[in-house]
Image (cartoon, rainbow, N blue to C red; front, side, top):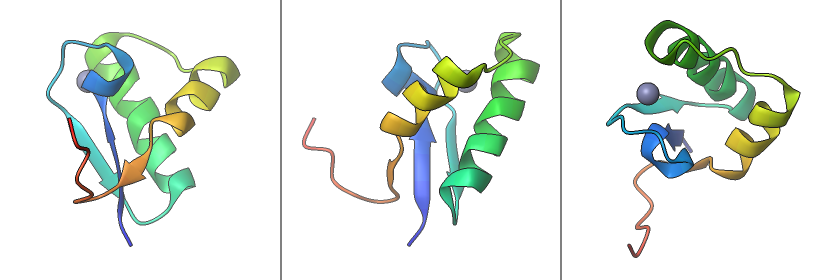
Length: 63
Ligand SMILES: [Zn+2]
């Protein structure tokens, strides 16, 4: 099952949706995106926060 992470879920005005097959892969992808597009280096605190926002790809959010 694929996982996804949306910048918008952490309050960033960005429509980027990152997807990967594993959480570690996804976090690595998100970290690279955050650095290149937002100029933000993800530290442990931010990574822990990002992990709480990871969701299953295609899952209805109900929002
Ligand atoms: Zn973004």
